[in-house]
Length: 175
Image (cartoon, helix red, strand yellow):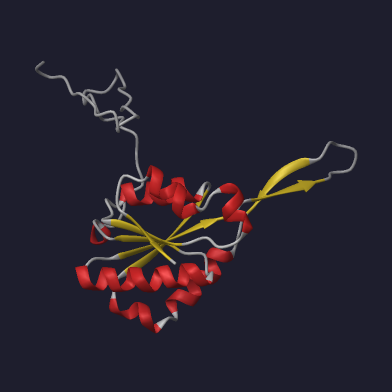
């Protein structure tokens, strides 16, 4: 039909139309804009662990070979903390994780990152969802993650395994 726009099933959020505006899609939801220099880059999950350092090293080489940017993603933990205020019932408060600031300073001083343009993105929430969301926003060519070792990964499922099942772009798991 003329004048109609059909949305793909992947576009789950449709723009809201304000009837008072002359522009029909003027009230389109504002998304975080990403730097165009990092479009089609390589997304890597990084938390400072040994496996994420190996994933970062692989992602640096991959970005360098392809001539693209590197999007380093740290999914911060929001720690629920109970606050007791006298005789009122306890309240749960989200305490920010300052590990991203520390990781950012360490990465800024790292010589091995001088070969590629890179940015550090902080997110909060489910690691798999946030890595895929950043990959979608930047139209990443691949997502690189380190493998999970230990009993937690065996019980709850590893981040790499869950991400490989749900991602819409290649996922590279570094042992």
